[in-house]
Amino acid sequence: MEIQQIVERAGKADLRLVRFLYCDNGGVIRGKATSVGKLASRMSEGIGQTLAMQAFTSVETLAHVEGMGPIGEFRLIPDADTFVILPYVPHAGTMFCDMVRTDGLPWEACPRSFLKRMKAQLTREGLRAEAAIEHEFYLAREQQGRFVPADTSLCYSSIGFDAQAEVVDGILEALEGAGLSLELFHPELGPSQQELSIRHNSILKAADNVCLVREMIRGVARQFQLYATFAPKPFLDQAGSGAHIHVSLWEKGSAKNLFYDAQERGGLSQCGRYFIGGVLRHMRGLLALTCASPNSYRRLLPHYWSSAYSIYGFDNREAAIRVPSLFKGREAASVNLELKPSDHSGNPYLAIGALIAAGLDGLHNQIDPGESVDVDPADLSDEERERRGIERLPASLDEALDALEQDQVLLDALGPLLATSYIAVKRSEAAYFADKTPEEEARQHFYKY
Image (cartoon, rainbow, N blue to C red):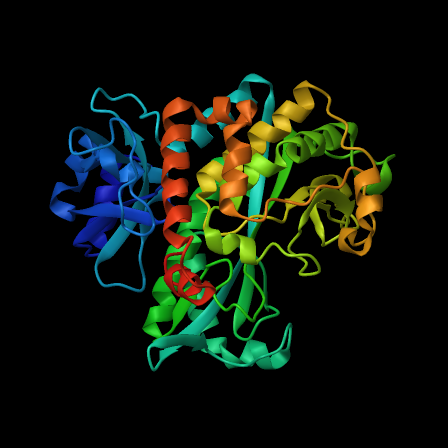
């Protein structure tokens, strides 16, 4: 879409402000806004933002990163293809942005530009990747200074469908109006916990959609005097919320799914196995990007169906990588891999980009993932897990960050500035919550994501 088309649409919709948004290293969606009268020039020249914002944490402190202080700016340059009119606030629209240096080049600390680099690498190798996210979230209300679930419905229950039918209808109307295609929706395990899936798309569009889904759902929920929380573990005594990433790899310019082989178990090709091998090899460092908050690690527990061990399995929902069963009549198109240890506290551009980097390492080096695990690994003895090479996932954000700092493949993919600033932000967040109670941690994470 061209700049003039955006300006004309904004005028016809009687917009006054257009938000220029981005997802930062802390996983928080931030931005600035311009008046519609200045929209054309701002789309071209961008909006200035201090370099320090990529050292800003989710607890509103500034991590120490060389060069990210009071001096210097980058520009927020919006992607016109992400323009959406917001139905839940008056006279406003939004776009998602790249972070660009003042000389016009992509800023090395920009998460969205990182994912663009990974997409370009796939193209150079004759590949393209598609991704989709399962969005889990709670609807809640505030009572006497604390958050409580909006209802007491049961998992998959028809009562759960009815209890929040009006707000869910409003959410679906907003998402469809923004051009997002809904695949599935249902009440999840926790009281007033919801899950919806958006149709798969290119990896860049999929990451943009993650941010838009969060914005839309939270905005619509507020119209009903409710809060929508995407935090990993908003209620310590209830099920956690994930953002499971489904990924598939395709031959560029064709409809050939490279993860499919009709002769192999589950239709999973050797290419798919190598991709799994790469992800498993880098899983510990990858978690620092996909499960990016201290609150994340209260969700990743044995027997909680969120994955606690670095394994893969066919329709094994305790596996870090699940190979879903195929759909009859579209077997080749439906084969994909699901990364379960992922949640909305992670920046989706970093999470998806790092997942691709890990998988490509598996392809380049033909990393064998070994045999699939077809049982709950937590039911095995310590000796059996050790014999089979089954490792426990990191139990804290600091442990995952330690692994990321030792993972040269992921560090090289991110680049020095993005890796340094991200790790500094996350170390600062981990240190902040180190002496907080679990209840305080949950409270502070509740409405950031």
